Amino acid sequence: MQTLLNQGLTALSLPSDADKEAKLLAFIELICKWNKAYNLTAVRDKEAMVSLHLLDSLAILPYLHGQRFVDIGTGAGLPGIPLAIYQPEKEFVLIDSNAKKTRFVQQVILELGLKNVTVLHSRVEAYQSAVLFDTVLCRAFATMNEIIKLTQHLLCADGLLLAMKGQVPEAELAQLAQQYQVISLAVPSIAAQRCLIYVKKQPT
Image (cartoon, rainbow, N blue to C red; front, side, top):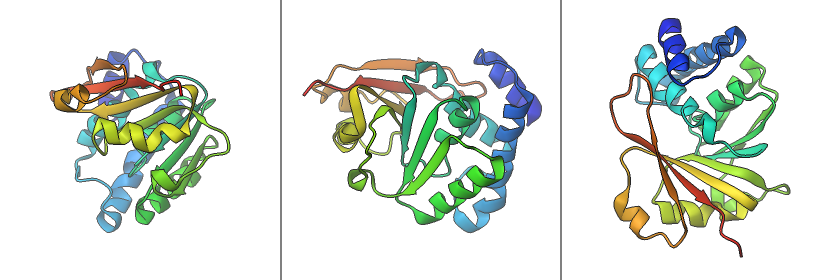
């Protein structure tokens, strides 16, 4: 796992950092430990988790905007936990409607000593934040129109939505009124197509 992670970080042009790498690998071990009881991920192989969970999450790092981030539908803590490990100076709020998964993420935060992460058990439409976010992150949990509708109330005036998708969702994008960019992602050790849909908040 260490070799695969090192090679992946190099391919993503991310600096090597022993402490961050140790936390990333400890995160994978925690997923494996809790997975049987909590059904966190269908991926069972640890090396596959390095690619599909860690490197897939870190591939969007160059596109993060601002200081405060909210990860919607975080599940096992993806992409929020890997990003928070690599950017300890930034603030991350992770939200999921599945109580088992938020309990797991809380345990990760405690065991890895992540001071910049908060996890909440909530549905996105019910969540109100006193301080708005610079960027909404998600592994696309719905169509692009639905994601935009559900998350706009969380973004500050010049906020940004970053939705991780597999293949480019042409039909969904054709229905958008907002301007958007499609960013192709090259994730080390993953042959399948990955892309990031980048949508700026529209002025009201």
